[in-house]
Image (cartoon, rainbow, N blue to C red):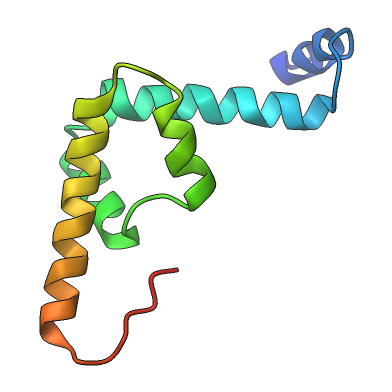
Length: 98
């Protein structure tokens, strides 16, 4: 039996641009959408987001393209900023934020 991704790949060949980039962008969009609508209040997700201090620059900007999710984005990044502030209060040395 062929997997769903096989058929997604075949369907994507009819579109312009890189097939792999298009599928990855679509999947990232679906993940970020689910993060904001279904998982933003999950304590484990928030803890992980706080520990990692948010997302990379590219995916943070991609969050903004989803539209209408400012509360979810604010909740996630508030916990990240709280973590950064906590860490800066503990040390005089510069933080590695990557």
